Amino acid sequence: MTKKYLALGDSFTEGVGDEDLLRPNQVRGWADRVAEVLCAQEDWEYANLAIRGKKIRQVINEQLDRGLSMAPDLVSIYAGGNDILRPKADLDALMRGYEGMVRRFTEAGSTVLLFTGFDTVDSALFSKTRPRTAIYNEKIREIADTHGALIADYWRWREFSDLRYWAVDRLHMSAAGHALMASKVLNVLGENNVTTANFASQIPAPQLPALAVNSRGEQLKEDLGWAKAHLGPWIKRRLTGTSSGDTLSAKYPDYVHLSV
Image (cartoon, rainbow, N blue to C red; front, side, top):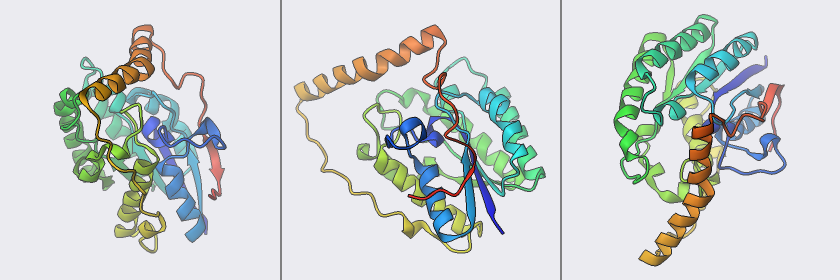
């Protein structure tokens, strides 16, 4: 009997940072990588409605009803990173909506996989968001406890503090980061009997480049280049109320049997 895996969320789940010009939206990502293993090892189909830039309310309004109609056996949900970056966002209110989304899937019989947010303690740019991420994570744990959801505990996976797992935009994981995340997710699924075996070993360990050792001048030049290429456009989108995902559609709006 075919099982169905559905991925919901924002750029994290769409796969931004893991470039693949031959795929929809030109990205691959951890969810695709997980689906590739599931489809190869067991009888699974996969859909992905995640679109970069989406906030919690947008995921609820734009992806929830469609997702419920697709009756997934497994649904992964991650949203909130774009809300955490906005200090005025009411996380308590947003997480009540998040819980409602999880509740509706569990009541429909789906196994739900949730994610904690990444610990930004070592990030000069995003460390100020750490208290809000900690609040978000506690809400996620409460929701998981209440509704029997699984947790992929990104906060506690310290390997991701290595900058080589991050893309040049410093906001999204690199291809190596997405590969590591896929292995971690498969491990969670295997340990909780969502799959018949633990398929984490099916994802090859990422080959990391040597750590760069930059002089102060080289680092300043790199930081200025990053600000021009990534920070400036992000600020402009914030000021104009636009999103990098405004012109994009879901990568896999219907179930497919995904292969590498």
